[in-house]
Length: 231
Image 1 (tube, rainbow, N blue to C red):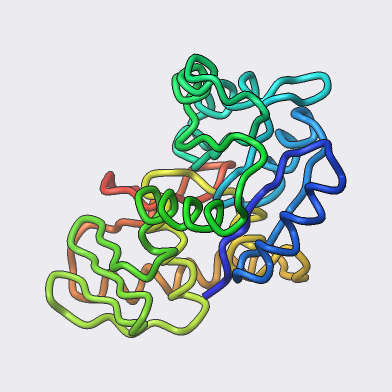
Image 2 (cartoon, one colour):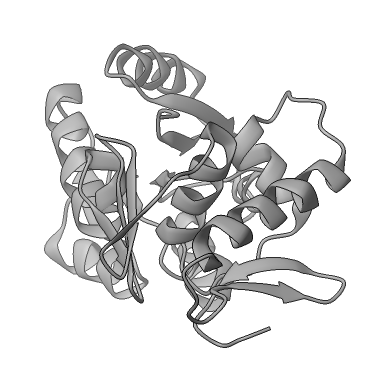
């Protein structure tokens, strides 16, 4: 299972270095952005699991970035922890009201930050902490790599398993083929988009062999989604 990707949005280079070191040591992958505009671009290009977002950023404040993330359907539920020198209760409330999941005032303990990240991920994305996933009549256990549909075992290849897990982490969200390549094969992988279609067909066949609604929805000129609506 690929390690969770944390986007650090911070303009203090020294702090970014410290955060990257400690996050990677704790088993996370790390992406960086030096300001709010860059952060929004990174989020369009990569499948980020959590954002560490500084309040005071050049050009676009962390609060505004958080508000924009919450307005976009594809990032409306993305976990966000705000980092700031502002420790007043009123500022903390503003950050949480803007949509942040948690808030840490500088200076902070990196051990506590890692613990907070795990806590937020457990609430928002249980699969990242090894919990079972369910959607409609499908259950997926990431630790044992077992998939069941309506009590029947589903046998999937490794790529189909990763595809299904990704869809079940983000139910009803539409993913372009390029986004699926980044999430399932990796950002640096060279995979033709037609390869995605081949694995989607295999996943569909495995899931639908016993009958029932086709849960993989094809969205014309957009991509694929896990959805109970047929089509």
